[in-house]
Each structure stands twice: as structure tokens, then as C-alpha cells.
Image 1 (cartoon, rainbow, N blue to C red):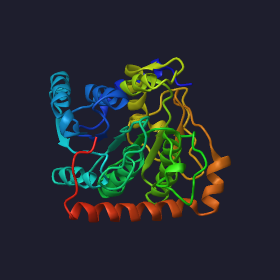
Image 2 (image 1 turned 180 degrees about the vertical axis):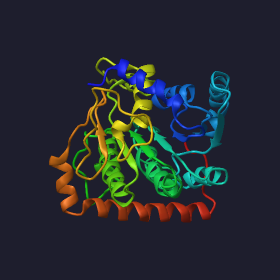
Image 3 (image 1 turned 90 degrees about the horizontal axis):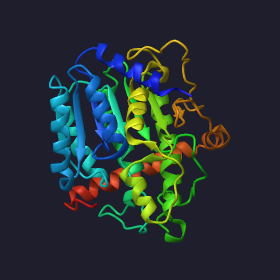
Image 4 (image 1 turned 45 degrees about the vertical axis):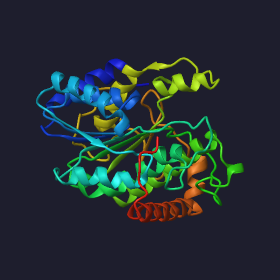
Length: 330
């Protein structure tokens, strides 16, 4: 277990990193992502921060960014209006970043929700709970790879369920057949497909460090929503602590394939990577393992099948966007 004291000591050293770290937050309008953005901006020296919000959340998120500007006026804080339940909107996000930045150091992805009300497809024909947790995240990574590879020590953190992957319905990966869909199945597919594709990105980009974190129950608006639908989560970690731990995962060299950010403190050891080359991390910052499942999927080429299917989804979403169907969905 990595103690909260160790996390805080590590985060305090972010101030000593080079100025101008570029961080992209997808999912920071509430919950863990919001707390991570606040803690990172508090410590970083002259950071360039990009955060994504739907049009309906612009005003409240701009208020948050205004408080962040006050706490660290040396940084630049950019709000990009986009609906990440639509894959095609991610291209708009990336375009806005590439127009002003020559590199990206950190991509932090925590957008998502559980569709307790049932599957309600977006205009792209996809389940938005899977789009926010899988398709749009993978599209962001794919499109930002050129900028990530120009950073000294690029890092990706995806907050979902690293180490909690499960079997896939390989004949219906997007669970389009309604008998195959449930809010739980969509969660398992998002996490498992996410790990397989992130591993693929890691193998093809050996300088890129990727963390897939399972934060456990955290006292966020999403958890409050789950209670309204009859779920009874166990004791939760505070959103504040989860944000601090998220920043630790995004900046400490314990989770780096090569150094370049905050050096490991005394007593810490380098985290162990999965067989596919990414860091699967438990709620308290320790490496976890799911090779019993993942190694079999890799051996059968399921990772390549998932990526091929995902590319076809991306192509279809781009075609739909070209036909003018994009709109705010959630």
C-alpha cells in the first residue's frame, strides 16, 4: 500500500519539474478527474491544462477553472467544449490542442457513467456509457500519440477498472444485441477492451507509460447516482484523496517505463507492468495482476480483433460526422 503521506510528499515535488507541462483532462467536470485537475494545477509550475466539458457544463466548469487560475496564476487553463459521448467530438478536442501545443506530457481520462436506465444509443449508434469509458478514450490516445511521443516522459492514466477485466462477448463487442447488453456487461467490456488496446498502444510506443487504475469506491456524484438506483457501495475513499492519488499515478516515476517526472521516494519500488506492458493499479497504488485472463486473450489475438473492430467504429463515426449528425447527446 502506498500511504497518503507518501503520495503527498511525491506530489509536492511536482513543483520542481520543468515549467510548462501539458496535461489533458477528459472527465474533469466532476469526480476524480476534477479533483486530479485541481491537485495537479496546484503543484505544477506554469502548466498548460486542457479540460473538456459539454456545452451544458461549460459555465460550472469555467467557474472551477477560475478558482484554479487564482490558486496558480502561472498556468494557462483551456476549456474545450465537446461531448465525449460522441467519438467524432474527440477529433475536435485534439485539433484544438494541436493548434497550440508541440507536445503533450499527460493525458488523464476519467469520463464515464453507468447506464442504469438502459441502453440509449447516441446518433453514432453507440452506447454512451461505453463511448465515454472506451471508444472516446481510445480515440483520444490514438489521435494524441504524435504529441505524446514528443514529450520527455509521456504518461496516460485511464481511470476505470485496471485488473478487474472479464470475459468478452467476442461476437458482439459493442453489445448491440440487446439481450447481451446490461450496465454491468458494458462496464466489463469497456474495462477489458480498454486494457487490451492500451497494451497495444504501449507495445507500439515503448516510451509511453500507461496506467489503468481501479480506484475502488470513491465518494463522487457517480457513486451518489448509483445509490439512487439501489446499489450499496462499501466504504468509500474521499474524492479529495482519490484526486491526490490520481496525480501521484500521473507523475511519479514508479509508473514510468523511463524516468523524467517525480523520482521515486525511498521505500518505493518500480511498479510491475502487465504482460502487455501497462500498469494495472489497485486503489492504493500497488500493481495488480489479471494475467490468467489477459494472457489468454492476447494469445488468441483478441487484442488485435478488438482494435480492428474499434477502428471500424471510428471510421463509421467519422462518416456520420461528415454527414452532419453530430450533436450534444448527454
